[in-house]
Image (cartoon, rainbow, N blue to C red; front, side, top):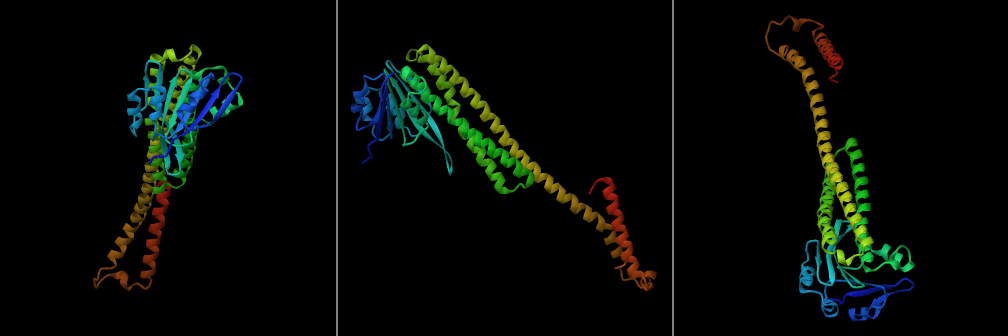
Length: 323
């Protein structure tokens, strides 16, 4: 048997506030006399009460049942439905979680896969009476929740930027396979964020065009700013993607330079030994009549000559800038 979803209600007006857990969605209706009622549900397992209490359309529940549903905004006669993703940083990398949001009359209903979200700053502002929450309606709360989702991307992008700067320094000092793996991991995270964030452009644009009647004029201005904010974040994501690709190119360029350096040194060593090998080859021939073989100082003279040749070639290479 599936676990019963946890339901939390935040209800507030200009001069009062109440927040507590409730047993069912029917209990949430007890707060309808407040200016705004925010109902948060942790868990997608049992949502039959939504249809019974609020009369939401079957198309909404079909979208919620898909574990990998795409980001969307659906406008119905008297309510608005959004499905988007929150992104979290976990030890194994970035993970995303579906989040559904409904706006109907003075109710805002959020549904999440599990407890924990990016909405705590909104909760604290409502609880303490900060900002415009107590003076605005449910449409402003919806904007604030969307803004919290978007703002959550910024610190993650900043941390990714710091990690790339660290990897850049490491590549210049010592490029190894672990560094390359870390670069590819960051690149996958950037692409993951881009695939999650990019559909929000269309979603927010649909809110502005098709759902204007659900928002006051001032709130529609906030939505315009949110759309612009998403575009700015996507520009940062693209910049990070280019930087990650640049790190990969830098890595292979550094490896290539080190390989060329090794080949250059080996080539110099081989070049020095060519005349020395020739000399040892000549005097290694077993002819009977070779005058140098009977010379008392022939062995030492040959070694000295070979040493002078090697030193002379090293000096020549240095003068040419090859060493």
